[in-house]
Length: 110
Image (cartoon, rainbow, N blue to C red):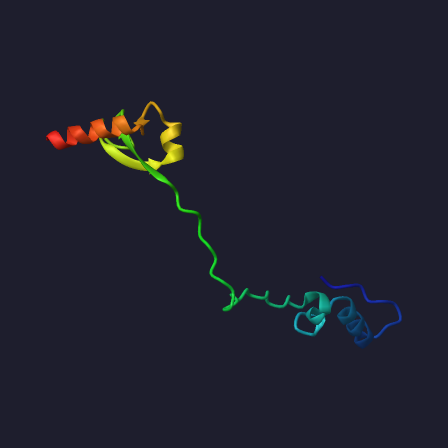
């Protein structure tokens, strides 16, 4: 869209004024400090003298008799699960030594 010529100005003056008001791409207008890209983020480097990071604590496993066929196996199977799982599912798993011994004795008969 062409701008109206200012009264009393020559074509060259008008062109210079247009350039000032609407800089063209690549003429240095985008080189302002606000447009500079951010420096790359620093990457973390492992300290070779630091001791190795410890993983999660080992989970205590217990043997349990499966009472109901499902995700843990068939009835009377003996499985190893963590203590919290065995306690949370008393209708599915029985971790008492007597229940485990009974299930193991059934497996020995076959």
